[in-house]
Length: 481
Image 1 (cartoon, helix red, strand yellow):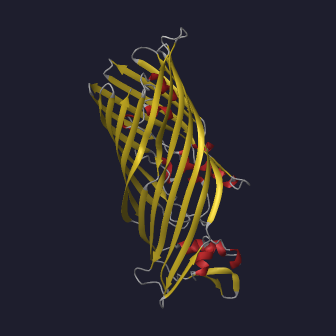
Image 2: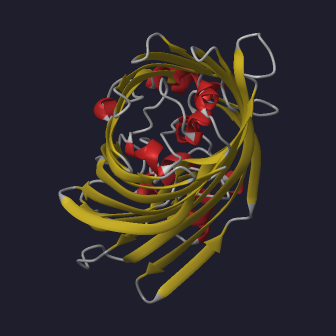
Image 3: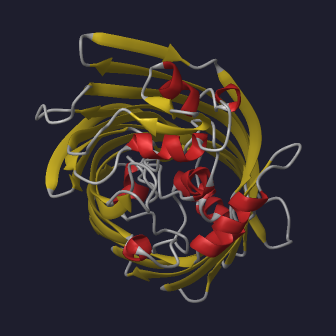
């Protein structure tokens, strides 16, 4: 499925330097949501006390203990993402489609019932891949600004320094395209080419890539009452972003200026690992209780980036400048997670599961060698908070057909400010067809949330309101043998 992260799938806040890793990077990789098979998604990822689905290897590994046969699944998915942005009372929209692999996996079972008297009925081994985040999106923003410009941030960064020390990814670009210039008689203080404001500000951002996790799991069934499991998760991440920011004198009201544009490119690649441990207890034939813990994931990331700028001044004067290619290696450590679930099995014809997940986002952090992230980590602790995620899913069976529905609520990671209510909701539904040796499942997931961002320095420009909507369609094909 398409998995949305609540912190802007793109880094909408303009850093002065394109290579400035910040708290947004920590949140991008810390926020995951349910991904996997169509059955798992159609129940909003709420199967922690029920098990028996291969995607539970990545949520509550004890679910592997409920398998009775070897099972193979594969799940292609189609996602559609759209964003409606409002800036200075101007609204614009954009959207993007993508085709992806949501899940593939295999679980095998070794029956022990006739081999010992220890109480262990079976042991299970499995591996699967679940897509846990999608970064596919397009955002378009535009609006007139009568009070400030991005060039103000470059002037502020330049003042008090010589041009030789300008950041080559930002301020130096504005200098080399004659958008900022020294004051007469003072070569360490600067002004920009806008004699007055009123320019049209535009920004477009296209992102791609995803996070995925390959789970290697082991579990067992003790007396058909207690099910245990453990998973080693291997996480891979790829994030691509291209953003184009423009200011245009669309009303021909600024003397000496026509337009300028800034293009920034970023690619982040990385891998990491975590461990998960879980248990399911079958209290009665109709009541099950499950719990799991997820250790932090330590992601080793590598950024590659560059920037370019072009100015178009009056008298047909155009200038362009390009930064060098930059790179930076660092790690992101995501928060520890705790999950608890309650499941009901009703006459073997219906299932219901409720799940709560606790995540303290203040425990996310960035590190490097040497460590340059003390300010960023302090910002994470002051800006973010702990959040609770709630997932509820149900299934009713009319063999060989099953109908499913679910709802997931993800609490906002923000402590306060405009984004304090930046929670998101996912509404899910699906249908399945199952025979003894094969099955087909279909799911639809609709996710919505709102977040606020800034084109540049929040003290200079009003916020951008982004309304995000994601639709995902998934089909799982599975065989048992």
